[in-house]
Image (cartoon, rainbow, N blue to C red; front, side):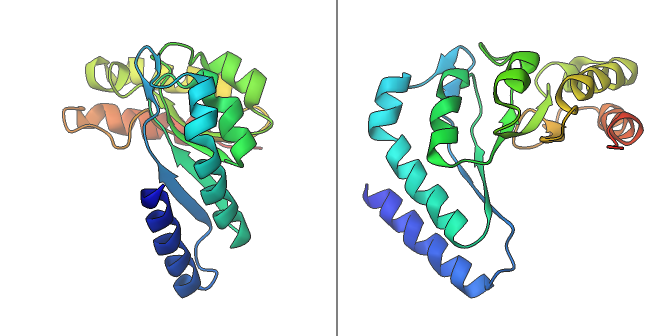
Length: 181
């Protein structure tokens, strides 16, 4: 609780000082692992969700959208994220349990913006430029319809062991297939 109070107060001071110059309140923590959530939904709702809702309300009170960084298999927690007022989730990891992109888009696409989903642990590191291009195109075909998708790697950053030509292939594919009409 004291950590949340500190984060709330420091964020509020930043928002006041920024005087409307910030569009997105980006916050987060990893609530998932490769095999699922670190806490079940019942415990998450009891111990974490109220604090998340408090922080999301702060961002909304300052006119911002709220994006939650949260890696891992968090499919079971997404309804709680939405109930807390989260507008977007960052670093969607399709290789984790429960993170099937088509199901996520179908079930939550109208209520949550997804950011990430280009597999940075396997596709970007081990693929060829052509396989990266194809995988990026496939993700875009699933996630782009109807909006609500920001294309990017499925991790905080593109990992240093990623071949440069694969990074270029991903961005070229986004430029070619990612435009909205």
